[in-house]
Amino acid sequence: MLRFHFAKMKFYVLSLWIAGVLLESLLLARAWSGAWFKKYPVFFSYVVCVFLQDVFFLVVYLFRFGRYETAYWYGEFFSILLGAVVTYEIFNLTLGRYPGAGRMASHVLSVLVIIGLTKPLADALAGGWAWSMTSVELERNLRIVQAVSLLVLALVVGYYRIPIGRNVRGIFLGYGMFIANSVVTLTFRSSLGGTFQNAWLILQPLCFLLALVTWCALLWTYEAMPVVESQPRIEEDYRSLAAATRKGVLQARTLWGKAMRP
Amino acid sequence: MGEGHASLIITIISLAVGALLGVLLILILVLLRPKAEASDATFPQGDFPPTSSIVWEERERQLLDRIFATEDWDFLDGRCPAEAQRVFQAERRLMALYWLSLVQDQAKSAMRNHVSQARRLEGLQPALECKIAFSYVFFRLNCWILAIVVLVRGPVGLQRAVLFARGISGQLLGMAAGADAHAWSQRI
Image 1 (tube, rainbow over the protein chains, first blue to last red):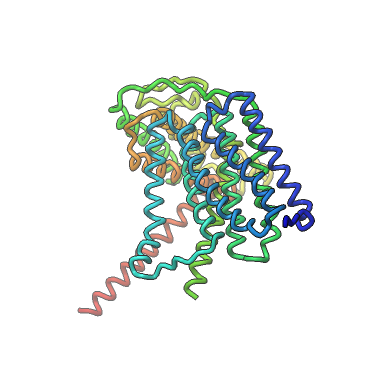
Image 2 (cartoon, rainbow over the protein chains, first blue to last red):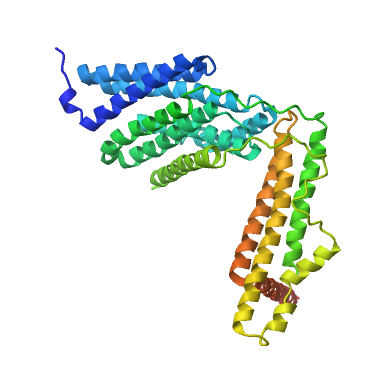
């Protein structure tokens, strides 16, 4: 017997859900009409999957409520997997044309991964690792890994002033803000437990709605990536470039030092 | 207790990572997004574009001494009305801050040239890049501290603060040397 759970769903929850589905449809329609889905295939696939998931979950919630929780968590971890691929595409789109900066990002990430894994590995070797973890904690930890990757990417983009186009900036900004908000809300959910549940029901979909609005705004039309500057001279110039830069900064520091000397 | 402590640390780290990512994304992708480079002119390595028409020669060293030295203030102190002293302090403060901005521009110019070239190079060395980045960040931090001291105490006050700090460190060194000598004599 079908049980219709429409009456149990709060109005604002349903509104947020439907608003999300509508925005996803709009984004997909623009991607198709503007033909930019070919330029960002992974991101487009991600939005398609999320759209299908939302529709599926809405049906499950309304007509098979008893299975909703299980379906939700399976879907959530599938989203994390998809999100990892989207993160990879963002890295590729942003740093693919700047191998030096890309190398810098991968080195910094490797160092952070080593630092992050040292304690858990040490605990595991000492037999003190507690494998039990709730679904919320597991999702939070996986989102933190994504957040750290995007953090490193943002730092490298900011430091090297990498020019990125409007579309890539939109994908990066929307997805990054969603991950940032997810980490914060999942942390609160994990720490506060059931008392945060109602707030979580609003904040989680609201975060994704903001991401969808950002994507709709910045991906409304296709914009080509900025032209890559011409290759500098031969690679051996790097050492002399670094030496000249350090000399320039040192000159400035010397002038600063003169002001401090009475 | 141990588990609660670990859980608290994880909570703090998670919140910090989330907040930092959000703030950085807004700063870098929205507020400070790099404008199209005006020119791809790469300056010959070793040369940096002039930040202003000022060329740092011995004459500039003399001007620098005048901005931060105490002689002019010592002359005015007690000799002219309070209003004139206030105007003098304000103008010296402006000069000091302007000079500081020129020094920072010189370093910024060096870094701008560096990052515009380095990002395209495949042979980038991460360790060297980190050293350059840290030295630049450390320098900017020192400039901000100097700017705060100049804003609060003025350039004349800065010199006095430096002299005072040196006096204290000299006293501490003297005390440490005295304590060492005393401990050594006790052992004998």
